[in-house]
Length: 278
Image 1: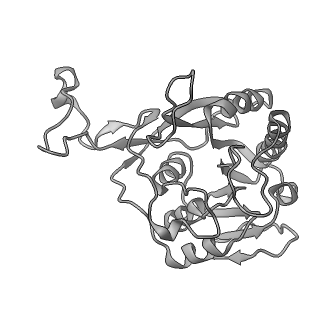
Image 2: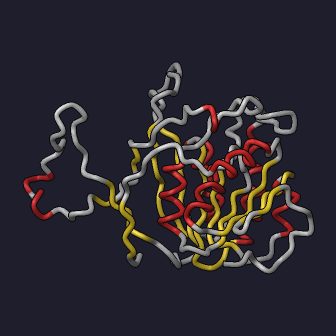
């Protein structure tokens, strides 16, 4: 399995048999990636909440400037995406409404709005209690790859019995579980210190999110791009699932180096992946 035969033109900070990591601004690297060369994009940008990510990242911009910045890197992500490729953006619902509209203007096809439950959010006066982050899923035309993911039938953690009766049709249920819904309530928080380095105060994503995204939308050997590396969750999952990857991170990349050297996940995933046609 070889890495793509194109050169970014900048030496990577980290190279593996499957991936390349660049320590730079994504708007410097993305224009160097050839058109229609990437099979899937996953982006988890700063949410513009005033968090401290490091000395180089500004997470507090006027709304118009933040949206304009997102439009610039999204335009590049759409350009490098192959026909039939998939694009995922993880962000607050407030921003993903706007970014989803922009992606449709660029000609992408809406697939899903995935709500990922987050129980640690703080209440906001005068609004409903916020309890989810959004993951928008678009494709460049008809998806080239889409795999059905089945999740285990829910059981009570106390008695072990099944929580739902499925309308009396339990005997007709698929033995591998139920189809993955667009509301994910089973994503564990990341508490392990390995994925919360002292140089980055922001939380890390659960590998379970990336495992689902990558298994759903790619095949082994496909190329995945993540322009906001963070703690390296995307790259770690790609290494484990035999996907090639291009990573970009503006801040310190040592936590990503350490993580890839350890190759450790932070949960046990019991999903069943089933090939199907969209």
